[in-house]
Length: 232
Image (cartoon, rainbow, N blue to C red; front, top):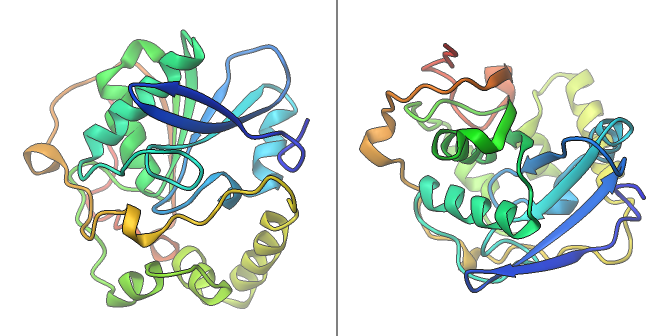
């Protein structure tokens, strides 16, 4: 099975019915994807997910209150991480590698800090540290509201250069290849009207022994990376 053909499955725990898809190889440590703000399973690039799936199992899921999953979205990152942990537990996974993109990267960090034994390797993409400052670009908020259009998508996730915009358009075409069993859009009413809060001002002193790969280009991300990412 692939990104386009994997059926949507459901697992229920703690009163939340989580939607997920699993594809790629049958054996190995699965790679769990954590998505950006208001993004669902169909917002991932099949070129990326299927690429990883050649060598390992891939798991996409909608966290609580997102797209096909039930419940309400929490107003803290740590609560989102707790929902993710409940989902992982419901699948019976003893360990996973985690890839977090944008707000999914902050959730992935909280998840790793709270459940370090569950995370073998952590990949942070286009995100920032728990103590990072939010973007000051007012257009980010404008393009994050309502139904996502191609214009919104290109502004939020790609640079204005011709090559980056072309890559974004190609991504947009690939993410719409799936025609059946697609996620419904995440209704703005199911999201809190404010950014999820980080505890203690985002400051964190915990350390974990998890392999970390972090990469982003600040001008191509809707998340500020001004504070940097430190791995010890």
